[in-house]
Length: 305
Image (cartoon, rainbow, N blue to C red; front, side, top):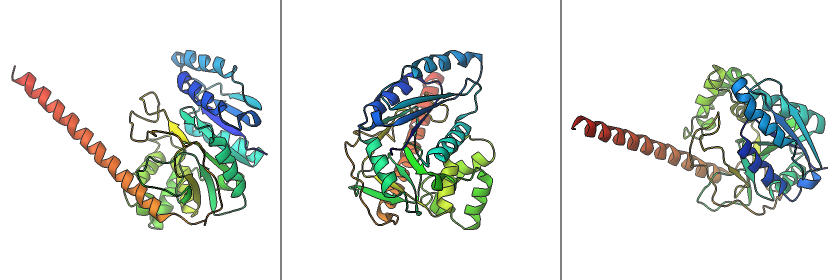
């Protein structure tokens, strides 16, 4: 039995169309059940966008079944995903999760279902992931990381049962066990800061709690050597993401064969990702310095007129 697909949407019609059309082109789409969770509008101004998107959702076809679950009010991304994933995975035992800005390769569903089937009884494996960072190095076909991503993923009920919603509790445990540096990929990325902001109510993130829950339980996730996902949400249109091209994938992979490999973290790939995160930080600093320089030059130009 194929895993149900769960898609979470809000008000981005064009992004959602691209996500659904790419998913329809997957080899296993016609054999798969699709559940679409549509969050409600925040206010009267948001009604039109949500209504237009829901009209489109009613036209979606190309799957075994299409089920649309509409929220009357806006509950936010984190609550929508946590409640939606819990509902579906408890009923079906496994789940493939997408958001409305993720374009998939035609082999995405095949890879995800193969991974779910192959590692279903392996307790150390908590999830299967379709997105891989655009690393320059040569990678193995598939590999394990002590890390979860939120861009096209799958899990089983046994995995999602480990999800801890209390961000403060997770952060305290990481600090108590002196795991912050490792959690942050040798301090190359600010994951613990994101968890802190979530625990303080400053950031509405389910993904950082999912990562921390898996990390604290010493679980591994399977990744492909080349991404099967392109995130099109970093165009300034999203609520939870800005504008950036550092995560862009030049070409999605056509086929990834899932085979049994040793269930241990690939330390070499982990170091590659650490290097990649550091390059992002360096690139960000350069962009900030360039903007400051441009502002300074403009200010001097105006001053000297």
